[in-house]
Amino acid sequence: MIQVIQAQNVTLAYLKKKFALYKSEDEQFFTECFDYIPEISELEKQYLDRVKNNYLNVLENAPLLEEAVKLVVLSPLLDLAGFYRPPFYIATEESVEISEILSLMMK
Figure 1 (cartoon, rainbow, N blue to C red):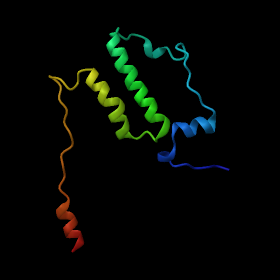
Figure 2: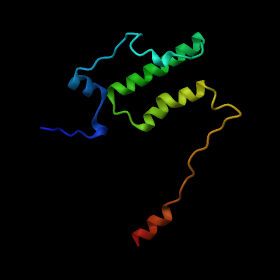
Figure 3: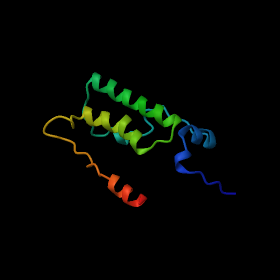
Figure 4: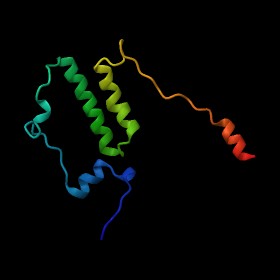
């Protein structure tokens, strides 16, 4: 029998329990991501460890939605990489006024 579960209801804790998953602490488990990366300072390592721990904490107990990833992972990494300093800048979505549409729909 197939059981369907909505994606927004799936958490890492649920998957760990259901499929007996566990986190590998073996540093040789996935070495490809370490090829060709420049050296970073001790302070940068501490900052990245903090971002990683924050991500793992959020991942463990809640569905990992796009906005959470932006807040917990993407924004700190962009800051560390210098993407909030000149010559870079960010642009946000423009606001859309919908109050007129709603008042027309209610008539």
